[in-house]
Image (cartoon, rainbow, N blue to C red):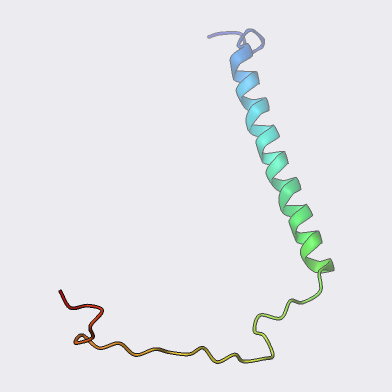
Amino acid sequence: MSNWTSLWYVWLLLLTVFLLLLCGITASFIKFCCRKKRFPVETFSRHSYDSPVIAMDGDSTAHST
């Protein structure tokens, strides 16, 4: 059986996984804190706008060849 202190790549891998987990937890915490301080955003506008619709039929001269 190998000595655990001589397996530097195992410690490097464990350190990398630990740092990735720590960064993920920190980012989630910051995102959670920023979400609580924001004011609620209105999803729908108060004004309704009408958009014109132009009807086109298949017999128009623009489509004829």
